[in-house]
Length: 144
Image (tube, rainbow, N blue to C red; front, top):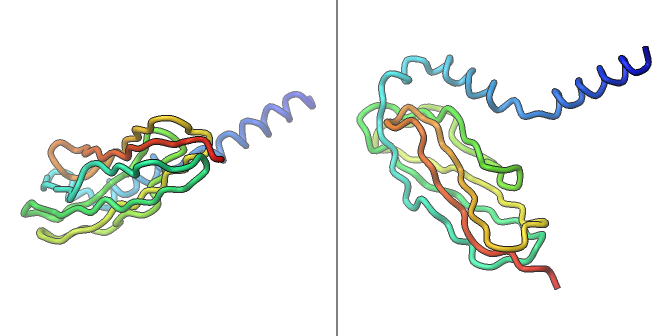
């Protein structure tokens, strides 16, 4: 019985620690369903940011600026990264008018990432194609 209880606690812990980002994305798709079938276009000021060289353990922040270059409202449904060391900190949760812009802010934690870095950030929106990718690159050197 104790083993069953322990397994239940472990499973509950794992489930509670996992990201509910997917659920949030589904909620956003439902909330803005009218925009799903009305694609627009997005243009990033720059799709890659090279942070140069940083010491192991430093945090790197960057804002990817973009513009809705289409003729329909732009809705970002989800922003995902390729690993836990790069986190989408902030991004617009409301529709963006044609011609207007916004920013996707990401934070890269260089802790234990010594070497060359190439991290992708996937932005899902009512665009065609639905996913745009921006990148953070650079080099992490051992702290002295």
